[in-house]
Length: 192
Image 1 (cartoon, rainbow, N blue to C red):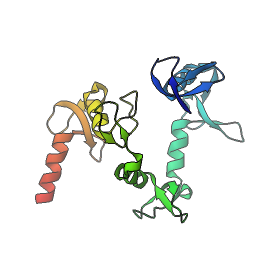
Image 2 (cartoon, one colour):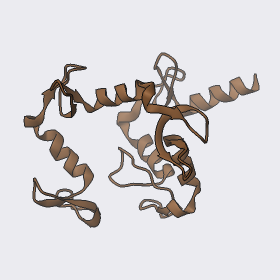
Image 3 (tube, one colour):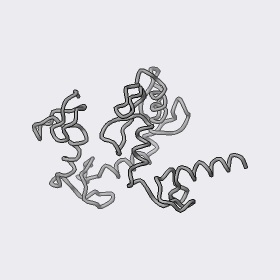
Image 4 (spheres, rainbow, N blue to C red):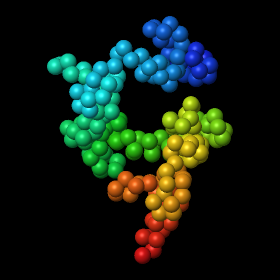
């Protein structure tokens, strides 16, 4: 991986030389081109949809990325108790002693460790940068949240205030609750 100009989106970021296309592409553009190539699509043996397979089993059954991730996360054989929080989760990293650490604990430690901080390209502050599907580049949590809030595709009608807003949380049945209503409900339950 190196810094360079992406041939497709013309942005200066981390790029790879792609042998198939013969140009320098960022991950985002490469994945968009790969998913548009329908000649490689197969019927997923789990969900039955025509998608790009992530894995082909020994019996030549194709499994899409979504089904592979769901099955991997459900399988308790792929999980261990995190040495930081004590929860049974998928192992993201191991510490020097070989003890497992889950993804949320790794992220928390990196957010607090200034060695992992970089200058946010949006606000200019030195913070830990996250990937966001709402932005083309990595950004700090505040900028990612701001971009998500302004992205209308994340908006639904809140079941509490009945307004069209960005979804903050969902209840047990999966109904959307805006951030303001969620915070108000949480404060009410804490004081009761």
